[in-house]
Length: 251
Image 1: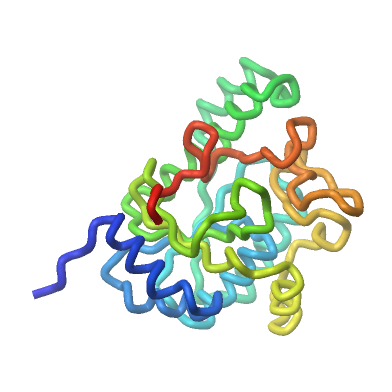
Image 2: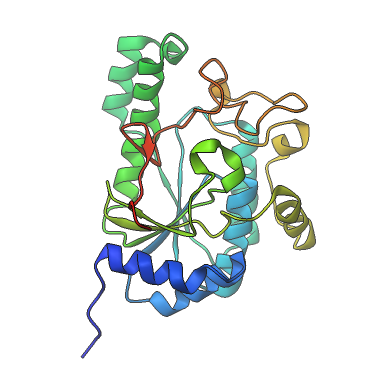
């Protein structure tokens, strides 16, 4: 008889215990032992996600890979997406798009760039173009792998390797949460992993083209995202509920 699957809280606790002391590639490879669960990795083709994609491809971990195309991405992002598909033909990368009707209604209401006018408008745009498609992509998923790192923002500084996404009832794995940018870049170079060329000209964090700018020397890595809003508080909503990163209070 197959072993009963754990509830998400217990699953998160088990993952945290087993993954905490491993390096990031070992954390992903460890997921081979969780084949009874549905595991998915959401990639934005960032440096972080490219490193994870490489391990997933090389280890043949039972991980479904998907990306969100908001319709406003940089051409450089599309380029690295294509290069990734060519380098890792054994990995099928699904693409989820915004709902066409909801996108039309959003643009009719606030205009194509109405997100500049208010935080409310920006969050509405992020919801239609990113959060709602993500919800569709994560249907039925037990374990969600992300590329979050603690250095990205103050909101993420105290996160763990395993977090319970209470809003979605999913065990979320952040294998790179404690990896620094220098080690990450060295890994990318060592394995000749395709990466977004915008990273070389001052874009540490890359989202939609209208909402992302290069940062200046000394600025926080997330300063280039939604730069017209309050510094270091910017999140798109993918990992938020009521303005806070979704997590279990005791994990």
